[in-house]
Length: 257
Image 1: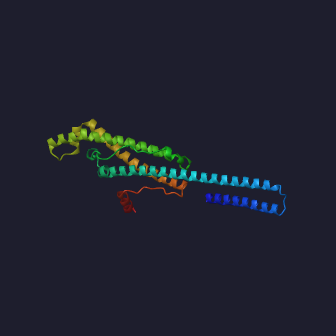
Image 2: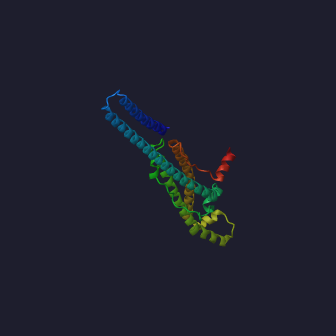
Image 3: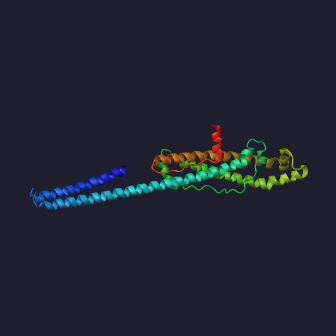
């Protein structure tokens, strides 16, 4: 709307300059004004015309720069939302495939399998490109995103440590117990084979993994929703992407409703 006002104002200034030129020429031709004023009128019209043209061009350039900056900021927000959504889906898949089945099992540290075949590189968020958020009504969003990123990195480290321990310590212990007792045996026998220290470390890593995955998923969802809402509020004329829930989340929400 502001751009439309600038265009109308520029047109009116140009028309005013043409009218001044027309009536001044008419007045001089009819000897209403002395001929000596012709140069002054011509100079005035030229100055007004040059000024209005330069002003209008300046306003157009400013408007173009503003639109380019807005488009760049929206692209940065969409890229960040996509990356956060990618990690939400990745951790949700890990929770569904490895954790949920054994979540309430007291021996879950023995039953949750090691994570394999899943790329676990750290998230890539371009914070510099999101600096426009500091001007929003929620300037702390970048801080909470950074905290959730650190939560993810710490959780990934725990997952890798637990997976390594599962492969190098737990699985050999399972094989030793199976040789003695066969394939069916109580968890206490496996813990006895592991020893108190390794059993405690495995429990601790498993608890940290479960808590870290749950906390990271919740933080990611909150940050995605906040970043989308603020970007839409700041740039209402642009398309801001959202996150599509995984099928299991959508189904669970429908069942609760």
